Image 1 (cartoon, rainbow, N blue to C red):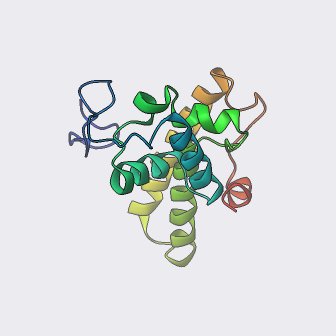
Image 2 (tube, rainbow, N blue to C red):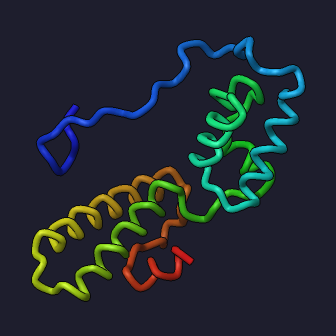
Image 3 (tube, rainbow, N blue to C red):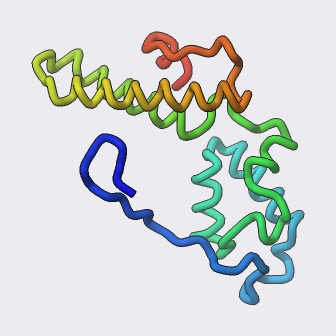
Length: 153
């Protein structure tokens, strides 16, 4: 399937494990409790859920938290009240829009970036509409550039 605002096709970077059973190379000490405490520890250190998954994969050899713990990373974070107010993908889009805005303040004639900002902000509006419908965000939540600076702190 093609990307939304370009004519190119995308390719994901990594593949998920084909089976949902615990791999044989995982130590006996890395059980569900160990994985949950590690996820909580990494979240308290300020890592996002995707970064937690990559750290567990790359440094500890855990391909999927769900196979070992029986829960997803977001479920573990929700149980321990470590979930962020704004979902990670929406926050990344807002950060991208803020970077483009900062660039446009210095380079007012950069019309290509201006168009890029329009595309990113349209994605933000679509994504926020989805999260409102799924009740992840409150119904009165609205994206504004001024509010974006507060969200990114």
